[in-house]
Every structure is written in structure tokens, then in C-alpha cells.
Image (cartoon, rainbow, N blue to C red):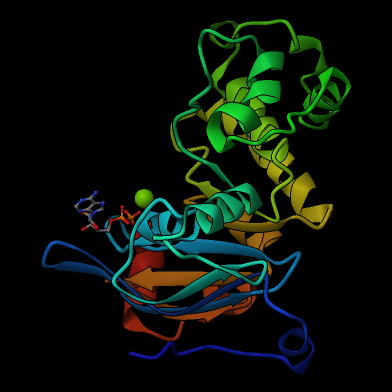
Length: 258
Ligand code: ADP
Ligand code: MG
């Protein structure tokens, strides 16, 4: 089913996309979980991805990050196509895409500073890792400069997730993917992480975030994508999508949240 609301304004259509996805299909065995996704993301755009559990949100982000092989369609980041049989192309892609997950995934045997400094080498096999000054700058950006020598288990969940954001930024990604990054946090720690994400959005970072924080999505995103059964079921500016949902499926999803 085509999306009910799919506005493309002339201004956004003229800029080259930083993420370009056409006809993406992904199956696990006989279970097709992405059924033809088309998505063009502009540089600096903030996109919130919403939808029921199992609708394919995480799989879509994992495809963009090169973590999943897909069966059909094309996907490129910064004009570099994702080619699973080309190790060099995959490395180039992974260096352009940062991803943060629900779990904090810091290396427990490394200090906070080392987590930020070594991740590009360990995870992305990048020759150039940030130095101490750069790592401190990144930690300052997430409000944790004083934790440089601390160990991950000395930090709260919110602080650990902010370190994970600093670590992702150390790769200087063109796009940052966030998959429910506040879902595992105690409610009182959610705000500090969302504030960091909001500051990145304000600085012009291209963001694709799967989130259950609807008021945050409404406030920060330029565009909201509602996924349903492996398709982009509705897409549009947050005020339209939340204020005037077009399909019964989105209406039902939104009312299930209250
Ligand atoms: P969401 O993030 O929207 O909850 P997912 O992308 O995680 O949805 O999952 C979409 C569908 O793909 C679900 O039916 C899920 O069971 C299936 N799926 C996800 N990952 C795997 C996997 N590694 N192997 C088999 N099935 C999977
Ligand atoms: Mg998910």
C-alpha cells in the first residue's frame, strides 16, 4: 500500500540525499519483514520511525548500517552504494554510519575515555582514532568531560548511553541511527539522553531514530515514518502525522499509546 501522506517539497527534492533507499526487501527465511521500502533522507534531516513491535523498524536501521543482507532493492549512504560482496565498500559505509542501541554496549574493561578513543579502531578498523583532546571534546558535548577516567559500571544508565553517543560521534558519521536508545532507561534518566539527541539535531546531524517517545518525536523531527507490517504506511511532518493521521492503522497505533 502506498503511504497515505508522502509530501515531497521542491526544496528538499533538489538536494542530494544522504541516505537513499529504493525498493528494499528483506526476508528472514520465508518471513518477508521489509516489503519494498523507499526512503530518501536529506542531509541534516531528523526522522522519527514509529510503529508496533515487529513492524520492521530495527531491521530497516540494521540494513542501513550494513548489518543485514537484503534480497532486493538498493541502498546508498553519502552516494556510496551498499555492496555486501565488497568488503572495501562495506568498510566505507560503516565509517559513515553511526548506530546506538537500546543496550549501552560500552566495553566494560575500558575507561570512558578509552571507549571513545578506541572504538573507531576496534569496531570500524579505522586507522585514525581520536586523540585525548578530541575524546574530551566529544565527552564535553554529551556533558561528561569529568568522567574521562571513570569505568562504565561507575556510571548511571543515562550517562553510559551518553558515552555511547560520544563514541558513535568519534567516527564522524554522516548519519546517526538510534534504535530505542532510551527504552532500557529508568524514566528519570530519559531526559538527559534526549537532550543530547536534541542538541545533535540542532547542530545539523542527520538522524534516524526509532522511538517510543512520541512527544520528543513531535518536537524534534522533521519527518515521521509510521511502519506497519514491513512497509512505510504513512509518512509526513510530525504535526500532520500525529495531528491528522490518515490510516486506521496509524490511528489505532497512536490511540494504543495512551
Ligand atoms: P521492530 O524493530 O519494529 O520491533 P524488527 O525489525 O525487530 O521489528 O522485526 C521485524 C520482524 O523480523 C519480526 O517479525 C521479527 O521477528 C523478525 N526478525 C527480526 N530479526 C530477526 C532475525 N535475526 N531472525 C529472524 N527473524 C527476525
Ligand atoms: Mg526494534
